[in-house]
Length: 205
Image 1 (cartoon, one colour):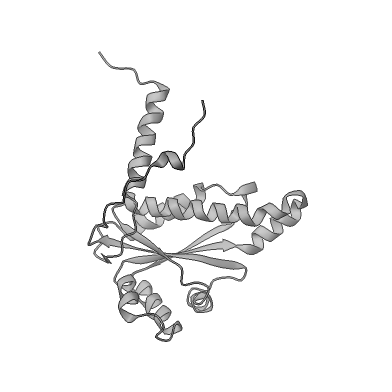
Image 2 (spheres, one colour):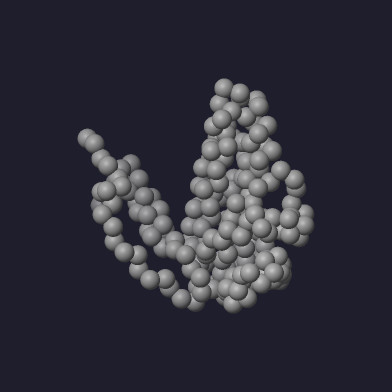
């Protein structure tokens, strides 16, 4: 006899998948470019996530530049040059060895123009857009892990902003918020220390 699946069970199954993916989403620093998924799969995931992540008033204020292959290698050489030796070559090479970088942006001009249209909420649009940017980052990070890729987030902005803008013809009005480096996992991170989550999640019934 087949077992009927209740709505609660369906929600539990979906929740388990999300939780398990988030558990696997870690900062992976030992990466190389020997990936087992195609560039097309990566690009499609980035497109889907960027389209689906919520943004207040449907601003569509987030943007991602996907840098792959040799352009990724050139990007990290350029980042090293911009810092004029103030960042170690060895550290930069760990990022260069990976398969690609997601340059994550916030469209400041769009945020400001939307705020002008809704002056009653104007002071909220900047924090709302940062919240959306954070949601974009965690979902991209988790999406990469679902594809079997490891990733880490770097913040070499704003020092690299002008160089990156020139390299990838980035339009005016965009703010670079993060660089997400991804690739084939060579080494697993150490297990996280268990915490008493009840100190941060309060429940009232």
